[in-house]
Amino acid sequence: MSAINGWDLLSYGFMQRALIAAAVTGLAAPAIGTYLVQRRLSLMGDGIGHVAVTGVALGLLTGASPTWTAVIVSLLGAVAIELIRERGHAGGDVALALLFYGGLAGGVLLSGIGGESAAMLQTYLFGSITSISIDDVIVTMVLAALVVVIGVGLAPQLFAVAQDQEFAKVAGLHVRAYNMIVAALAAVSVTVAMHTVGLLLVSALMVIPVATAQQFTGTFRTTLWGAMLLGAVASLGGLLISTFASFHATVAPGPTIVLLGLACFILAWPLGALVRRRRQLRARTAPAAAEASVG
Image (cartoon, rainbow, N blue to C red; front, side, top):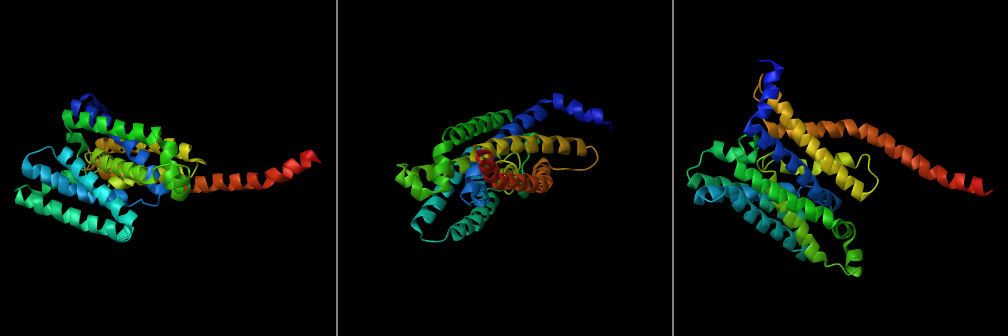
């Protein structure tokens, strides 16, 4: 088939819905992923994603919307992580491991009880953005907007808590409340990306654009905006690449989006190293230049 057939697909409703979902997911996931990276909780998205499998299976079992049951169960899992970490009953890595295995096992068990096929559950594990419905697009847009508005609007407070919790307490911030907000937004982001890259790959979309943006940016705010831009580019680009490549082979959009994000990071890393070296050189020569001008 000719390449023009690929462009013709963009006029179809299912592709337009997929593009909208990819764009808003690419913006929302790094918006909260930036705070997780700052707190060294990059794998939190994976833990919540595994818990969300149970939520999806619960929706399939009861006939309810898998999206909303995944949101509810993910929120409960995210809150559980924060409470365990805060109270110190177990290490954060242990809490994540428990959610990894328990959530995934519970989802597979419930889907089997409900008589659902493995293929049905797999659409949520690895994404199925080209089959997303209008209702799911609307829910995705609303939830993504919620994540972006809160993540950007509360950026100073959330950054202060993520950077130094003791200083945040002295400054009068309610650290527990803001930690819970980050956890809740992470849970919502996971379900937002469920149809795009899938529950097992969602953490990559939350982390990789942030790591790429950090190669060039010097402040938290520029990292936040840069990560959101890169996330949207990777999501849209991965979707388009998979669409055109599918004329020659079966190429899934979710993995393509993640691999495109990784490719951007690999390309950015040497350039970022050069940028950081030039900044360090400027910082070293600035005092000497100032002394020379005074003298």
